[in-house]
Length: 96
Image 1 (cartoon, helix red, strand yellow):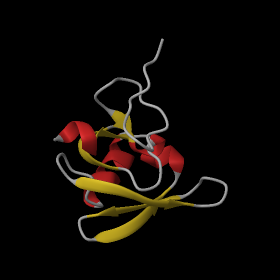
Image 2 (cartoon, one colour):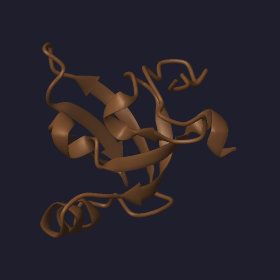
Image 3 (tube, one colour):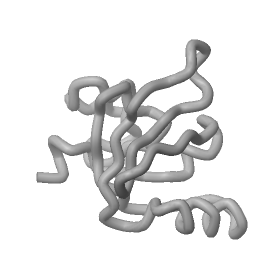
Image 4 (tube, one colour):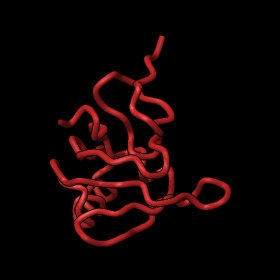
């Protein structure tokens, strides 16, 4: 059985210590711990600033949930849910 973390706004976590970026609720923050995916997608995410240790916040979601807007490294960007699921983070409450 998968465990749900107790970080407010986090919809679902596969493990108690990390979540996928697309699973966080609006207003939640965390630190990037891993970027997965095929070579080109992974490289693109890293170039956008999703490097280990980078702080990221979920700003808002589109009405149907896709795309999702994030704030990271002083700017906002939007990713499709499919892209965001390749970024693993430690939710803020657990990063401290």
